Length: 130
Image 1: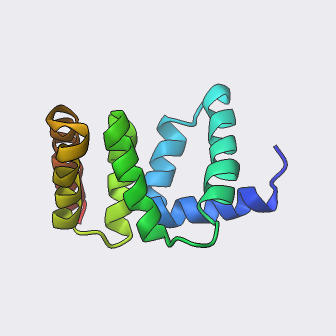
Image 2 (image 1 turned 90 degrees about the horizontal axis):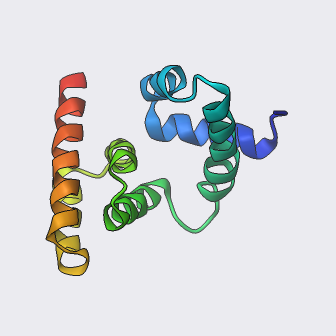
């Protein structure tokens, strides 16, 4: 796939949000076959290159939107990724936990429980990495 400007911007934003280590780990374990490479190329260009670079919201706010959306739709693997991104953008464990707890009044305890379990695991992994 020829690299468009949106693709290049997407690569930069993705690396900024995830960090070098996570980008490299995902390249080796997720996007290491042609099928997933196509998906990754599309996501870099369309989502990270066009959506995440739009004016009007900062990256920190966008990461919180993803955490809320993943929790509301039960997307646990994506939630783990977006929790890491949110922490890298400056949200504290307490702020993210409070966000998840707040959702219990709107989407229900079972989803929030799963989200809290995911957050517990992600936060522990991140503390171990430091």
